[in-house]
Length: 129
Image (cartoon, rainbow, N blue to C red; front, side, top):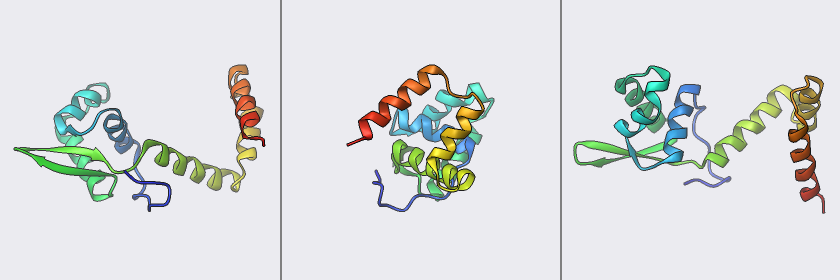
């Protein structure tokens, strides 16, 4: 598994992210295991899942280890590291690096519920020295 200081893999597509979610939930896993977890809901075939797994191996996001006649796949990046990197890219790209800008936008769009606001307030209190 990587840590925050390791280089991140190439950008992961939305479809590849679905495969990553399955592997973060349970790994190591075979292509069949991943397919059973996600393919039916998306209308994907086993071949599609295998293609996505191959792309993720090439991108350095997962490893593939032989296990008899199949491969077992394991994430090489932590979910928290990936989500953190994507969150920062979003804030950088859309809000000039300002997380406050993101919150202001969500508040203006009324996208934050009372529960969201309470959780944010609680988090801010925890972060204050």
